[in-house]
Length: 369
Image (tube, rainbow, N blue to C red):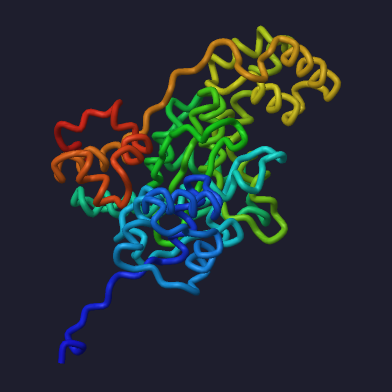
């Protein structure tokens, strides 16, 4: 009779175990060592055991699930939840990265942005609010229209008018995207974005980069959600061309680029006007035929000699996201504190605070829509 009323214990979702481990940058061996230490070395946990658990060959429930949750800085209910995780080949996950970026770095970022998505769904529920609705119809690129047409459509739809874009973050949020600026632990990757069908796009921008590069990078990520490439079109080249036209429209900037000879000093003047880096303006100049390839190479060499590759003079002001911080403020206020909000999200208070910059946030009262 008791068996008829038995309640199945929650079981760990192997995919979430892998994601939580990779988000921390741990190997299976390192996780096994961490699990053994947390158990007080009463029973040594091997890499082989972790491998079998992650493959689904072994089931994790009860105290052992709680142990994995502690080791993976997650909650047991998150690790036992049913959730779809996304990978690079599924057409909704993008990176702006260097060619030299290691595969291990990308795996960490895949895992982090997948977990961030789950946290945000839970945070919105706790806050009693819905995530933004993304209704933008992407422009099909590769036929009659190009990425520059898509950029002009965005500027027109959002009534941006002439001249420089005041806030790229505001553009992304106006389109229904979730923007999260955070340190990605170096400069291998400038951004990563995730946009599953039927959900708002999630755009993570690397704050380790200078602000002018962050602005162009965010415009690049907007390109992935504003454009739909035809077969054979390179999504990254498409997003790059979109970003250039969104921030520095050809018909507006061409006169500025030809008004006087381009030099590093002149590029800094135009940087203040257009709010993009000198390097981006130099690229724009050669792409639009305002300077020759040889002149481009000469100025490029001067910029390198000046040390502008790591950081240009005249830094631009930092932009602030508003949508995600508003959700987090509401969740913290309504749950009674960071600890309760973090647990509801599925992570630890330390991780929650670091991800959403709680120290720099006023969490005393709910945010206004």
